[in-house]
Length: 365
Length: 195
Image 1 (cartoon, rainbow over the protein chains, first blue to last red):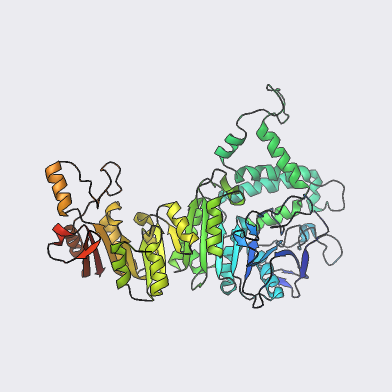
Image 2: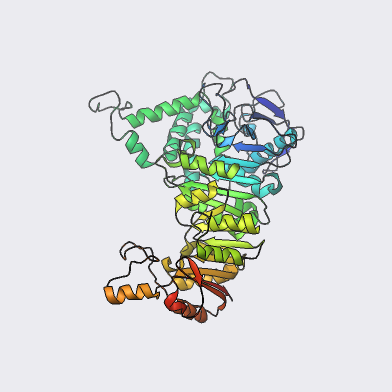
């Protein structure tokens, strides 16, 4: 959090209008690029990141030092081939890796904190479209995203249909369900119940709402995995002990794992950003933006679509992808859809999967 | 790549530049032919995810779906042609699929193995068991063909549905044969319908 961004930063010259009716002045977008833009700017691929993702798609993360989050998918000779394509990944507004968000300084020189306007997925995409304008890219060869990244890809296709020739949406949805909203609310309440949250004004303080943010991450992390995956990975095995301790330490391996995930997350993510981005996802319902009928959102689109789901993903289950596919069929769009088999639930889109690689390569090529 | 004879007959009679939906498109062989040779806008539907993945990997627009359920989402006459090759006999309700085919397509192509071919008749008559033949190579207990159909049955169904048979092609030994006595002589049949 508050890392000196080592990414390039694009300052959006115009005030960014938001769905709430507010505007974001002097918004900034931090981004990474890979490969070379063709002289006619025809080979650009925009990859959109997920809730807690960032622009470090195929390059090491400056805080954790870990490889880029989709390095297995993006690079020279990889399914999204940076020898052929100019790949862009930008931190969404509301986030905390260099783009404008609640941790950024407001015009008065103080962090926005909860004064940052509530944003939507479409607002994030407005920021991305402004970046494309700045980079001189009129039409993307493809826009690609998994999870919340897929929501951005769909939103771009629905609201700026002329800006992408191909739209690849993986493990995502066109609307947040009651269950999706419910899990997010658990996370937000965990953060806001942490005394260190201090109504969001913790940036000058030594105490950050890390405990709340860690719990939010723990709850969310469960939704990214499958029951079978958890059982296989941890079962009921105990952590560093032979017998039950009749106490409340992290006795089970799965508890220890979740605590590790939670605390690791607090080192790289801002709690207020977590509130803003989960809220944006909860507001997401493309049909609602288009007269209540999802097919209307894609009427007349010339783009080709590819929708991919995973059979063990219960966060954004296959039925949600089918819902999108049916709407695209009704709109007469060129659409492919495949449900891939994978053991690891929602997270499968980030993990090794040969079939996914072939689908992505075949579609994006 | 050489197309199966029924697919080749269909490919030869789809007007260039048409919008086509191939239901049960398999590995996309017909779609690829229609796109590359005839400049068609081809879409596919296939139940088997592994086959869908192969189609998408080769750049075809194919949706993993069940013809029994997923055709309902396409608008009326969304396609110039709806194609159902070697799939009718696997449908839960072939009659309802035919309705859907004639709804989403201005014309429909349907191909199927003819259960009244003399080999099939002979195998049942003299063998007394469900036929396992060149055209129907899978035993009764594991075949996907749950609604066997003959050339004459299909003509009846088309009539019942108010469909016009525009053209028909018949095949035996991988070769096209004439229409006379097709219900005896054809291993496979292809019909072009309109309504």
